Length: 424
Image 1 (cartoon, helix red, strand yellow):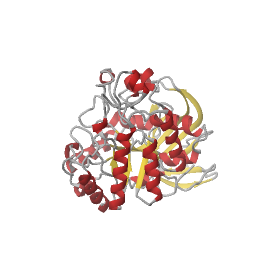
Image 2: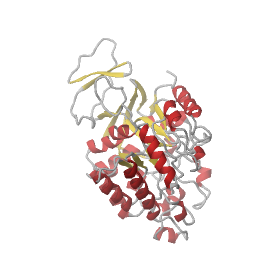
Image 3: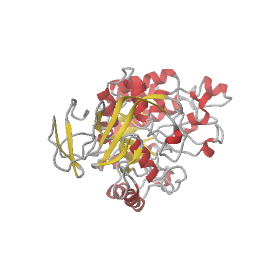
Image 4: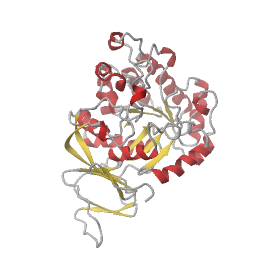
């Protein structure tokens, strides 16, 4: 099933070296070829996540390039884009080059990175966009630290646009945060806390959309959680503004009521919202307002998450549960067709960051995900490949499970096991 071409059916795929070399029904098996069966499965382009945090360098007690890439492979992801909020921040070409050098040695999938919009994520001075692009970044983002200065954001859009790269923006007016980053509403009140209104997100989404309209350049809105933000993006697209947007599995699967049972494992930024906003997210995914599904995979240790609702860091891991949540919460209820869901996991994210990936076609990279859409399984965090266990989905029964992940023609994951060493 290939969303990039709309092609679906039963056919064989031949892989030689790192490319797809033939496709068609009943291909003859050549001498020495290995057959990978896919009975009762869907064969799709390798999944692509344009929003992950692998905490490397500097925070590798939470995750690193090796463990993060293995978690991605287990989730069917063959390509991910890492955010820049590492220590040190990914704000220089030297750090970017070091990232790619280490990724080639340590990762079992394709790793890319963004460069930060501002130096040290401080929001004061733009980084050297030209040098960062030459080093290999696929976009610019201060994810985790909204760019508050509108003039600086305008300059960022103009400079990134000249280079053909998106500015990827985390939208949230931090001055509107109360005690902590949870949704302002009845759940926050029951916890005795002042939360964060959806308006904090909406203000920044509106600003960044207007700046994209002013400059004529591409802005990508991360982890949208608000119905009003979705309406703003929908209206902007209708006017021809170059805006794309993403939704996360946790935002379309959970409400802020999860805080009452899951505690800080349900604390993320932007926060979980009410059922009204979840319904708006599902509608936005269905009508194309929200272009992609991205996990915002954000590992933290149990000790960090035990610091209480005010002090615990925001974020959850998501790579190893993404497919199951997409299939269980969106496809099986009929909110998205299988082809629509796969597009948001493959060709759509590839297009946003300009990668020639996300399709099954002769001559293209042999990045392939095989999954069983009917397989039922229980989320057991202790079996994750990620270093961290901070998920609110422990114990959930999901449908849709990855069987095999192929990266560049190599089987890197199969039936619960990592099959390849990074340096192979």
